[in-house]
Image (cartoon, rainbow, N blue to C red):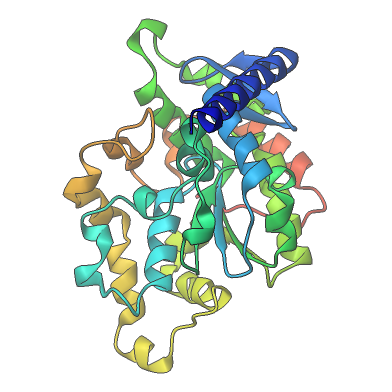
Length: 329
């Protein structure tokens, strides 16, 4: 037993040294929150999440029945987790007895980099009963090969870059230590436009990676937008259910099951739950900060015409020829 423990400790020390060597070799920038973000495999990763991302890449073995939910931070992640969990488990839970009434969505669908592999954990996920559901902010090229090759489902949700930036700026500002002073909008915007996203970007690199995969493998990668979901949540939920292999029956639709889940997972309903007003389900962030406005077009209250023109030009250039377009308000 002591020998096993010593081997484990030595392995942990070796991995810690490897991480330290890796970080010293990577480009870094000051984080919008605190500490640094490092450019790892083409994306900006928060310092504390790099060991977890590496463990995820090394150790996660996907199963064909898995569902992986993917977003950039502040793109509707909490909403997507609530919806996907509810759609997948609707035979087990009606809205009135759903765990969402007393559990934060992030505790029902754990992140790989903030939960499953955080703090040097290496859990035995083979004991998790299928179908399993997890979440990540990691860009497509950096996903483990087992996810790409297993035939499991990937659900990607994105948000227009204007609203994503403003929501992220608010979110990280609230988690920023007072001693560092406020996160200036102009500085954060310049960083965002230069590809130094507050976490897991550049924005267009992340979005286009999943967009292209959804075009090539539509049966394995579903691409959703926040704006389409706000415009017509019921039809988008039907798309989601069909993709997950559990389409709503005509009887369910007639009985109002779609509307029931939509109402359960709505921004106002989740925000009003006691569990989402207190505590933390993610490190560094209070649950109450996960819910701000949830609107499309709020960016008009913050960005100057010059900022809008700059980001529009970048968006036009980055999306040229891709077929992807964003609704911005």
